[in-house]
Amino acid sequence: MTSDVIIVGAGASGLTAAIFAARRGVTVKILEHKEKAGKKLLLTGNGKCNLSNQNIDPGLYRGAEPSFVVPVLHAYSKERTLAFFREIGVPVRERNGYLYPQNEEAAGVVQALLSECRKYKVSIDYEIGIKKILPQKEGFLFETKQGNYLSKSCILATGGCSYKETGSDGSGFLYLDALHHTAQDIAPSLVQLKAKASFLKEIAGIRADTRLHLYVEDERVASESGELQLTDYGVSGIAVFQLSRYAAVALKEEKKVTLVIDFLPKSGDADAVTDMYARLCHDHPSMLSVLLAGSIHRKLIPVILQESQVIDKCAADVTLEEVRRIVQTLKFFSLQINGTKKLNDAQVTAGGVNTTEVSAETLASKHTPGLFFCGEMLDVDGPCGGYNLQWAWSSGMCAGEHAAEYSLQ
Ligand SMILES: Cc1cc2nc3c(=O)[nH]c(=O)nc-3n(C[C@H](O)[C@H](O)[C@H](O)COP(=O)(O)OP(=O)(O)OC[C@H]3O[C@@H](n4cnc5c(N)ncnc54)[C@H](O)[C@@H]3O)c2cc1C
Image (cartoon, rainbow, N blue to C red; front, side, top):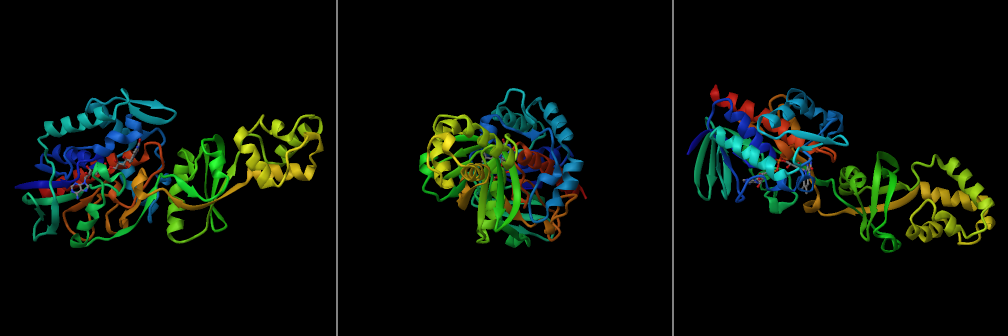
């Protein structure tokens, strides 16, 4: 069972790598340990597959070496990706900068990729249990429970370590030692944050338009705007997901992590909000809580008053100092973050194969000739909004073409 290129993993990056290798005229086989291809891809964008973003800014990707993505995203750009999808029958539409297939069906994307694989005679062997991948004098030996395979080049495309039921269970990292590679520590990214505060049960279920700032020790490391979802365990929502990788990495290093929430991001700075409330209080005959109900969720009011140490009373009796304390709480609500939801609940894995050991131009190993990497397995993670799939497509195209070239030498 010899092929020019063997790819481990039939996910987003592996299928793309297979097509781009096979289009160069080499024989390609994919070894997949699940019973079908693209199981994680089917879940993306709530089944609609947010496959890229109008603004793919390489500066938004993270990892120990954030600029690693630049050459690949330049050579295998979003434009090239969209042209590829058009060619295989997946026209793309935009919604608020997010790019989806026209029919908004992830299943259609998987079908189109598989159909292109068939066209170029890529063979996929499912339910293959790989025990070892060993570099040979020329090429690679794959020892599997189903027998041995040989190839001239190998692409590892086994994904991250979350949503294990989809197949990306971290087992790909076990092959690294024999291939002379190492991995950066793994942490969850795009995940909910946990906090411990007695008031969380009272305010669970509230959704609020906020500006969020994440502090590690006393340094602000990132900020995001968007809808915050308060839950009984902590906080969720896209803005929280975007901040989560910084929190996860800092918590792993046992650092103090604080989320500072601005519940009135569109009402100006603290002075402007203080003026507004002071004026309203001055000529308002009703209770303070009634007045606050005009701008914040009613379930949040008792918590804000308690945290500000102000009792509910007639608004006209509220002092300027009390107004200042309320505004301070509303604009700088501080929540101590003490964990994230589990790695398995994360949409993306931060960490992975050390990029210093991989060529940023070809995605070839610097240690083992003929070995290539692509997708989430590498120490690269992007924000929410199509960035992670764009990395899967771009790195898959790059690894596929270069692995084929290597096999043709
Ligand atoms: C719920 C959810 C929603 C998401 N939504 C989006 C979105 O809308 N937009 C976006 O950009 N990103 C999204 N992502 C992230 C995106 O899905 C991943 O970044 C992307 O799928 C990574 O592609 P990959 O090819 O590296 O890995 P995967 O797609 O995970 O594929 C890895 C493949 O390798 C196989 N494999 C693993 N180990 C082995 C082994 N030892 N032997 C053989 N086969 C193996 C797996 O079974 C799998 O088929 C989402 C993720 C989740 C979990």
